[in-house]
Length: 348
Image (cartoon, rainbow, N blue to C red; front, side):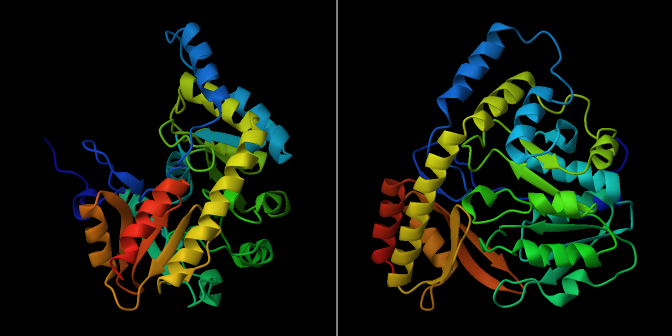
């Protein structure tokens, strides 16, 4: 077998959160929704199965695009479907960034962005957030070869948000496309879809993994101006979304009543989790996502993570060389959060 490309041999690869396959754990580490999805999803998938799986699916997912277009106030040709929003990020990197060219991302943020740059043989530039998790002025600075900027909003691991006015100002200064990754935005107070209409270089990605409870289905989408979507269709895999995921995703997004009720439950638990962590002495970053970022002045975050894991409670330990360490705790249901808090009370 021939040698792999040097870029592949030299990279570490993306490390997903732990997904234990044996034993029972309380999983508060990968930002999954603790509640079952809309019952319409199961019905839609069962109906799709009745039609059989012998034929290829719709290559562009028009059923989903039509329903999503109604909800978000655009036309269907403004929407690109993906096998999770990670697929969307991959398509964008392949389409806009060549070998040796530059991707910019905030730090700390979603580490897959860096991995995608490495796979492409591209360079990446990580620009630190300010101490309050706001965007620093250097995030909009000109740079040779800059081809794409990723902005997770809300950010992970912090759960913080750059307001639309700040994002627009950033977009107007950048000489390249800006992808606003809104994976967690359904738990936030605002979004940036309006900026897609106002700024040609702005694109917004979404996922159904978090707020719709469909992490196992793998479905995401992009909203961008139609001429951008048309070019991206050239890059995506021919059938990147299967028939069952298109059916399930369309049913999920159609049930906006379920979404509103689920959002309210998660946010109520999030607020309680933040308050209780603060009472235990944690430094807590106010979150607009379905997770909370925290650290304790007297306890190592890694030690707390390990001790919780010994009790079969998983949270995400994250350590950033230029930033520090902390715990990212997913907002589970009330019983899961209570179990985690009860254990933490014995540890701090």
